[in-house]
Amino acid sequence: MTAQFHVPIAAGERETAAELQSMLVDLLDLALIGKQAHWNVEGRHFRSLHGELDELVDSWHALADVVAERAVSLGAAPDGQAETIAGSSQIEPLPGGHLDGADVVALMGDRLAEVIARVRERMTRIAAIDPVSEHVLIDVAATLEKQLWMLRAQRGDS
Ligand SMILES: [Fe+2]
Image 1 (spheres, rainbow, N blue to C red):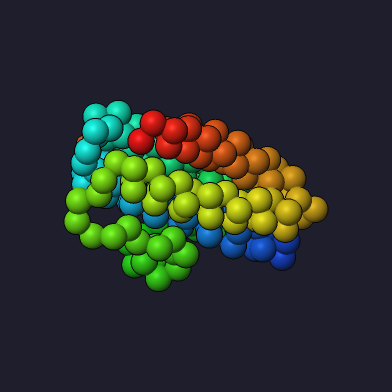
Image 2: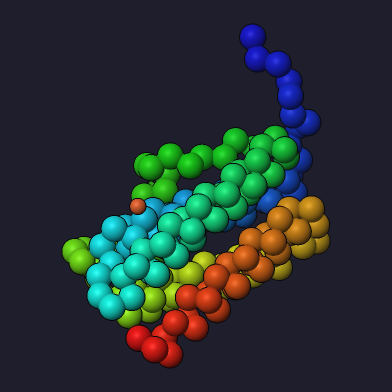
């Protein structure tokens, strides 16, 4: 017997839940490629990038948790399984093999920028439907945009 923990999901909330689900997939896939880069980065800036990538992965997991739990709060069931991520992520995989530090900064920066563009589109779409979820996405955007700045600021000496 399943207890009713959630209010029935309304039409607008269904739309919001779909936006939160695609945000969840973006964040979980970012975390996956971030760990891939953490393991495979090489070169002069190995040590700092190796550590920074782990911090980014931790942050993306934490944001994914906030986004997923906002979806649950609306009555939706978030899906962060590998099959779902593989089937719906828009993030291009990293090249296989070892990666030079400067390439990692460019590859991760490009992917982060694409995710940021999608977050801002999602914010616009749900602003009038659910300002609370919009607020969650604004926090995600603020964090990702700061991370992009800090990542790209390293290009100057690479
Ligand atoms: Fe590690």
